[in-house]
Length: 351
Image (tube, rainbow, N blue to C red; front, side, top):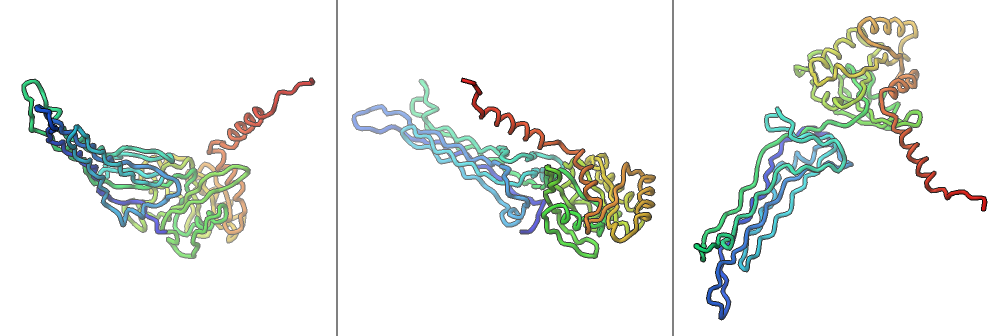
């Protein structure tokens, strides 16, 4: 399945059905009077966040969404049937933006969340509703109210607890393969990762979602390399793991390059907690790792870990530190299970 995180689509809600012009005609009834019913309501455009989707690729092939119009009214005071709503399923984490991308119109962060985005038009009035003491045989009626229409952008931001970032070839794919069941492509060249990857880390009885995004280079905010487009996928992360290649360019310079791009991107990414890890320790000795760690501390890093994504060395300590930034869902679940178990036990009695 191809990954797509942005798509432009056209939406149009259904128009209301027109009211009817009709008169009651029955044998032996001299003055039947008007009996034209109202038109039915047009269908709404509804967005719904569902589980199991992690791409917007479907919207590349289906870009126009039009709800049906309501049915017209009929004689005998029959109101036209309302049109069904058009429900559009999107992945959790999807945002609906205005056509100019300047305004967020809707944000879906939970499974099952629904929003009526465009309302269908109301049905028009039939001639029976115009009857009065001075207008006994009205022939006027209302057409249905037109539906709303607009172009919008869909933008997907993957929901993850922890974000993984660094320069190209810093070992991010190897790291996510080591700590999760993800099967990210690994290669000894820049930009091996072209689209974001998600994996679930299970560590010491707890779980969290880890997101790996393509590498950043200097000038990414201006479009250099793959650019900073995919940084949106880690905007909602609680903590960032910054991997630096110990065998690559100067680690302090690499650290400052990535953080400069985070600052240029904005959205609060530069203010998020950041765990810095010197990766590929298997390609260098401990003394060199310690020297580089001191340089990173001098460059502004709070704490530096030395790890090897290939062998797993030092990763447990890094994951321990990561857990300290995440809510302990396990303890809450365990307490809930204990309460349920206690409720199932019958009251004890010696008799």
